Length: 142
Image (cartoon, rainbow, N blue to C red; front, side, top):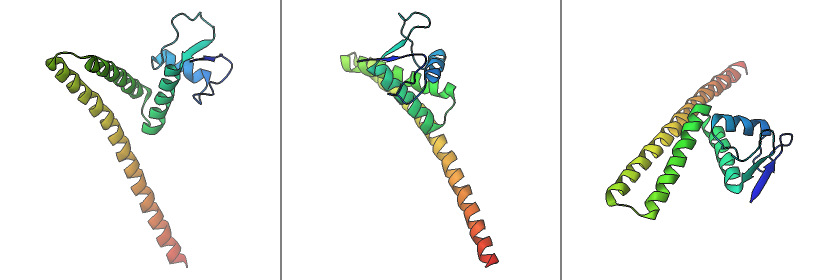
């Protein structure tokens, strides 16, 4: 299925704006239609829209920089390509290489998720400490 995005309308299916889409194209997070004339409407397949949703979800969930987001997306694309190669059948040695590469991609993602989880845990602890101090003060003022 093809979705069309005009330069003046939001892309309601992804919940973002044309400006964000153009910016993500500039960064290489999305691939613009190679056959599109400059200034023409952007056309996307369902897979493109799914990719955009996924990129936006990762950015929101992980709170990563656009550079890190690009690394994550690149790693996922490479992982998908390796997965297809693996499923198509290859030598046992190449299968092992593919699986080792997949581990590297997953480890990078886990590192980013873990860092974000640690930051959230620290914030939660700080807020808990603040709450306890306020409760103590309320008890002292009663």
